[in-house]
Length: 106
Image (tube, rainbow, N blue to C red; front, side, top):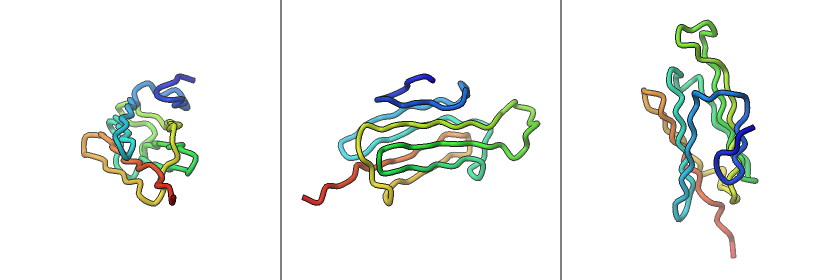
């Protein structure tokens, strides 16, 4: 497994899926390039421990681009707010996931 960012463990070999994580003052911005996949072929899940899982499954398995199913697991170094996580995907396979930090109730 390759390490990408703060302990990011990337899952099944899918070197064509590029991931970049940027930390801002109140969230993580996770950028992923998943060219050739449609919005409905990509799924993003998160858990309170700070893990973000991005999976992709092309509807057409014998597609001419050679795109195969993948799974990327990114372990973020902070607790995250599941209810406010948002995902945007462009027509060209650019995925942006905004993951806010969990707010403390102190």
